[in-house]
Image (tube, one colour):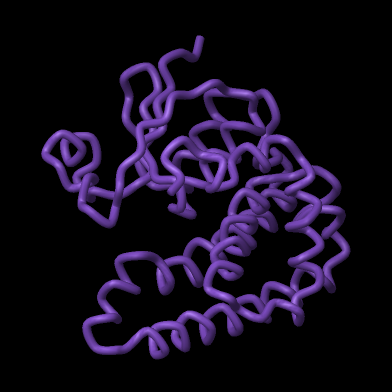
Length: 214
């Protein structure tokens, strides 16, 4: 039995956003403990004891602590078979994971808060924005080609049911819009994002709908 699920996160953290979507799709109730990353609330000794990296999200389930959003989403599939994020079929699973890892490993690390803060030591805001737009264009172009040409793409990244991949795509589109990236060249990505946001589980996970939203 699952109880006492606590998500340590932050409203605008895209990795936290992924996990909120996953929890919502599975219909799991959870408590949020959110941290103001800009003021270093996630660097307190109490939080470092839960996650030595001092990063969000971190999930507590029945007293067990799990870090890293990808691991958390996979863990949720293991402990809660209700609404699978990753199918059991190896070919379907591999495709969904390839889309997910393209976002998590090739886009997100270059654009997260720590990197942007570091860039501001040597670049003005225009330079940081140029960096952001460059990597979104490069990676979204490849992702758009994959999603628009492969027959496995349906209403969502894979078929007609939201999956692990959609949990990652929607937060990345949110970030791209936030940084005013031009997304008109990615109609398939935009269409999938729009379909996802029609679903309550995604709507409830939107950053502006979180209790710590500023």
